Amino acid sequence: MSIKYEELSEEFPEEGFSENEFLEESEEFSELIKYTIPGYILGLLAGVFLDFQGYQRSPVGQWLVRTLAGEGESIFEGIFSIRQRIRKAEGSMAEAYGWGKFFGIAFPWIIDLGSRLAGVDVYGVEGFYIPYFYALSDQIGANISGTLFLKRTEGSWKAGFSRYVRHPVMLASLFVIILVPLGLLGARILGFSPTTQTFTALETIAANLCWVPPLAGWLNEKYR
Image (cartoon, rainbow, N blue to C red; front, side, top):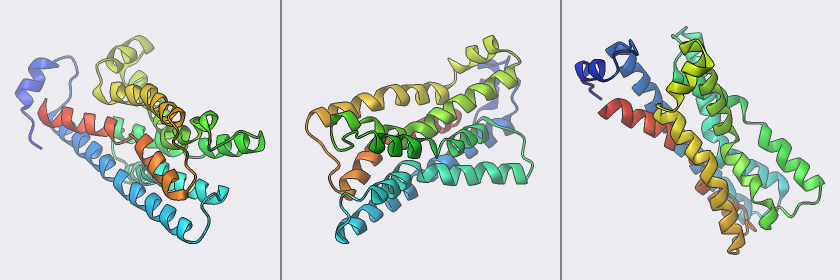
């Protein structure tokens, strides 16, 4: 994970980052990436187990499967951010990103419950947004948290936004937030329906592209 600091200094002289800061940020984003796969595995295993037990359409089962497959990494990333605070590490984009994801966990639970109480067909086309929020509400929270971090570190909204549009993690996050619901809607229109817990897990895993922004940050720091 070597970085040519001289090249970085020439390319971004105004940033004022040290080589150690770039290395630390890169290592932190690589940690966030590692948290996604365990969530996928746990969600899929839970789905298969519940199907085997005969709970293919259990609302509680879907809540559990979607939480694990769509938000499992948020729990781990929240632990990462808490650990950073305990060790009193200097605030970073990766930490702010983790906090945003952690605090976005409960939002899809409210949307899911409210939709069922309102009579929405959660298996039909109109219910496409439910897995979206399970998979990406934490991503939306991370994007907001990251934006506030940039505003705070840059000193103004204008400067923060200027850095936002040049930050690979934030741009990748925005890209994922916009495109995933289109994919979910398209799949439902074509006839896909999460009628089993395994299908529920697979749909949520496909929508949970939260690993893309941290990967963009890690690759940017590694090869820039």
